[in-house]
Structures are given as C-alpha cells and as structure tokens.
Length: 251
Image (cartoon, rainbow, N blue to C red):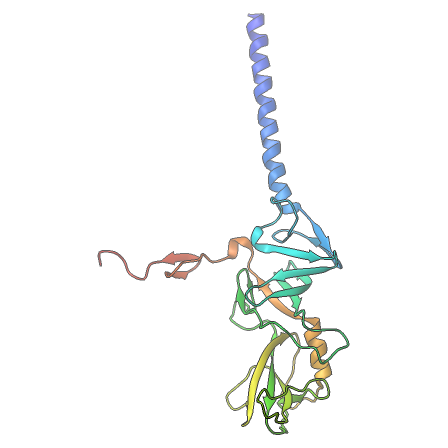
C-alpha cells in the first residue's frame, strides 16, 4: 500500500509540474506578443499592435510593421502612396502623425512627393463619422494672377512652370481646405494635393511659409486595431464586419 501511494504521489507531482510548465509557456507567449516594446530615434515605447521590421515574429501584428532607418527615422509603408516619416503614435486616440519625406525643414520650396493615402488598411485619413482628420492643401497653377482670399501665393517659395514647349509664365498658389464648386478660378488647375494639421478660414491672411510649416508638422491617420479591421469580402458586400453575397442561391 505504501509503495503504491508513493508511486501515485510521484505521478501526481509530475502531472502537476507539466501543467504548471504548459500554463507558464502559454501565459508568457501571450504576454510577449502584447508587451514587446521597441524604439526608433525620438519615438520610444513602440508597442502592440505596432512592431519594427526586425522584431521577433511574436511581437505585435505583422500588418502594423514599421521600419527604422539609421536608427533615427521611423517609416510606415503606405503603398501605393509610398513611405512616410512617422512623427508620433497616439495609442489612446488610435492615430499616427506622419510627414511626407519630400518636405524639408527650412526649405519652403520643397514639396510633398506622395499622394495622400486616404484609405490603406489598417490606416485611414477619415474618422468614424467620415470626416477628414486633417486639412487638404491643394497646389494650384494659374495662367493669370489671381486676387482671391481663398488662394495663398506660394512665391517666392514655389513656381510651378508650364510643361509646354513654349514656356508660358504661370502663377502658383495653394488652396487650404475642401475644394468647393466655384473655388477653382478660370485658367487655374489643381496640380497636387497634400494633407496638413491646420485650421484656415476664408479671408484669413496667411503665408505659404506658415502652410509649409504645417505640412512639416504632418497629418494624422486613424488606425484600426486588429480586431476592428473589416473583412476583405472579395466582391461581396459587407456590414458590421461581416460579408454577405449579392444574391442568395435558389432565389
């Protein structure tokens, strides 16, 4: 009886140790995935769901992978628009602030090189109500001078030249805010679009230097957390994160 009791006690002890070990591994694996932290340049505590390109695979979510150049510049790839410099990550508001790499400090002649990424999951330039998180900035070329409170003269910073063989003098402006019907003057064309975090009202005097400074500060993109990303329905329609066929078989 004594030997059987000892043998049984030994098996119970082994099973208990195995269960504790497995439980510890499961807990650690879960904690490692959500508690990994990284840093790049001035941005510290890069954590779930974000991760750096060379972090262990269990860190963060692969869809939120960022890259770090020369240990100083944090980049997010928003293809097909291109890569953007990440200036800040706000985990409470679920936003990131990014800057177009074509812009340069203390050089107001530098322009954005990428077209804004309005929707590139898990990132979106719109909030849940469908409004832009940042202000659009339209670059406009005109064949004649324009005297309008809506337009900000880019001279002497910029001069968008005509592309025809006969070089015709053109005039360069930016229009800050949503472009409404009638905002584009005759002889003018919108050449480019950027986003910036600034407020601007009609009739308010400003300079292109201040607009450029706002562009250098960057614009915001909302971030869908992993459990908020809607499914890719591939031709079906979706609502409330579910996919539904356009037609029901047999009807």
